[in-house]
Length: 136
Image (cartoon, rainbow, N blue to C red):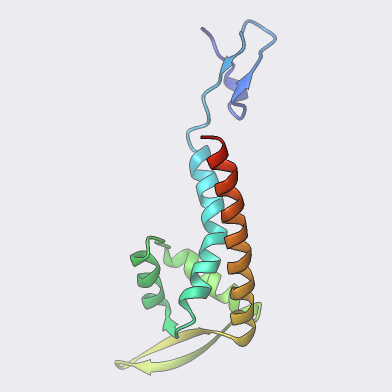
């Protein structure tokens, strides 16, 4: 049975040329794109949560990886700069083991924002569970 290659973004489609109604293969990297989008918001909460304790970038990255949320340095440091520019983090340079390291910690505004985000995250999670369990 032929399929309509141009309609990869649709689960089911009808082609008006020589195709019939049928499942259309989902773009192979669609899941990856959706996963990245989902992780993006999750990582903000994870980083804020991890920075309730002061850490420098490398130890933060290790903590996230140990928790099952690996992140590349090329994504972590811009995220830290953005969160700091938004007033959610504070940072300071200090020498440790004869090396200068930038230590990050939640600001008072970051503590408040983390609490609000966690409450919202929990409400969304509960709603999703209710919706998806109903579908079983």
